[in-house]
Every structure is written in C-alpha cells, then in structure tokens.
Amino acid sequence: MAGLMSGFHYTHAVVRGIPASLAKEALRSSQSEVDLAKALKEHEAYVEVLGTTLGLEVVELPADESLPDCVFVEDAAVVCGDTALITRPGAESRRRETEAMSRALKDLNLNIVEMTDENATLDGGDVLFTGREFFVGLSKRTNQRGAEILADAFKDYAVSTVPVLEGLHLKSFCSMGGPGLIVIGSSEPAQKALKIMQQMSDHRYDKLTVPDDYAANCIYMNLPNKGHVLLHPTAEQFPESAKVFEKLKDYMLIPVSNLEKVKVDGALTCCSILINKKANV
Image 1 (tube, rainbow, N blue to C red):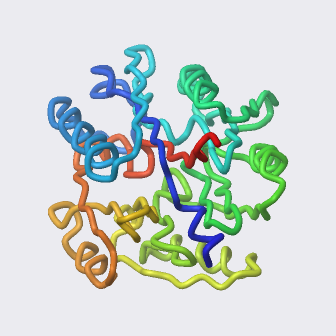
Image 2: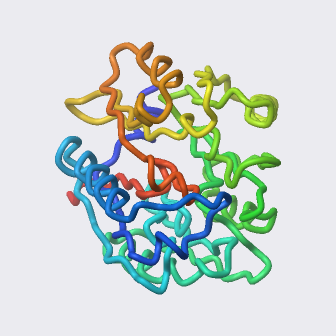
C-alpha cells in the first residue's frame, strides 16, 4: 500500500491564468454565459488551496488571449514519476497550449516525451492514473494511437482503453478518491465505463458513487502531515453529491467552487497538473 500511496504524493502544481477570451471563445458543449469576474475569482481560490492550504509549490503560467482554453492545463500533458508526456490535444484550436507547458515541465527537470505523430490525439482529461495503472478514455478528443503512445511513454504501467460514449472526457464522470477508490457518477454511461475498467484490471477497486456525474471529478492527494486530502465540488453546486463525500472519514475534505468553469466543460482536475518532485540529494 505504501507504494500505491506514493502515486498520490505531490510537491508541485502547474496552473495557468484565465484569459478574458475564455468567456466568449472557449470551447463548450452548452451555450451558457460565463461570468469572467466570477471565473477569475474561482480560479484564484483554487490556486490558493493548492499553494497556501496544501503547501504545494505552484508554478503559474501566464494566460494567453489567443488560447481561450489554456487554463485547462491538464489536457496539455500527462505526468507520472519524472516523465512528462506532452500531448496532442484533440481540438486543433488547443494544440499550441502544449508549448508553454513543455517549457515549464522542462524547467522542473522532468524527462519530456513529445507526442509528434499527426495521427495521434490525446487530452489529459481522458487519462485516469490509479497509482497502479492507466485507463485512457477513447473520446471525441482522444484516439487509440494517442493511447498507444501513452503506453509507450509509461512502460512500467498497464494501459487499458475505455470507450467514452457520452461526456467530453473519461474524467468528466470519474476520478480517484483514494488509493484503490474510484469516484464515479451514477449515470448509465459512467457505470458502464466503470464496469469495463473493473473487467480489464487485475486489481480490485472500491467505488464511491455520486448522484451527479460532474461531481465525480475530484482531486485526491496523500500529503505528509495532512494524510488523505480530497478537493471536491461544493454543496452549492451539487448538494446530493456533497453529502456522499462527507461519508469519507479521516479525510481532509476541501469543497472548491467550480460554477463558472463548468460552463465551458472545465472540471476540478482540468486546471492543474500535479507533480511529485523528489528532493535533490
């Protein structure tokens, strides 16, 4: 279990500012109006939780007005151990987001693997790392070739693919809620995806089902002096799901507001890349 726990130890977080262009130009599946001032405030609180509350070293990249979705850094890279796979996002308008991310991860002395195959697409939002293995959602944004390149970059881990038939990404309805614990939405597509993951895996996962699919997107960490930490959506946004999180005993539960970014399909995991940098000996 100790080795599994280490999969959720983090020392650094990479985030990026919100451009004003997000309000009108960011990709979205609904026609909701984004309140930019509220979105900025929400993101500021999110970054403060990572840096001030949890003590991670936060690397904040500047917003780029020509990249309306750039705050959603998770899609630009997948980091595991000291390797960073720079992705090739499925939406063409997002491809240049990887440039600043690649530089930032190089500056953190990670081993950089670039996804250069023009037939491959991969969004980090489709990648669920359980501490033992990877599940990759095959979605509108991620294809089989992208999953194969990820498997090649992280050879120490099994990689299984899961069809994402509804929703933008695999993590639009699931995330890790602890070592061996998958938080999953209650919709039929979410439950079907979980069943596929359970069938494909050699490991047994417990599940925590929440009524709202989007509420299943949480950030779990295991931190020195803090133990189990879970950032989850607020009761204001998802009252019924919030009650489910309260059942997690011995956790530091941190509700984080995401009312604005969700309008452009942004969830909690989307806005940071978490890294565990070993101290230089």
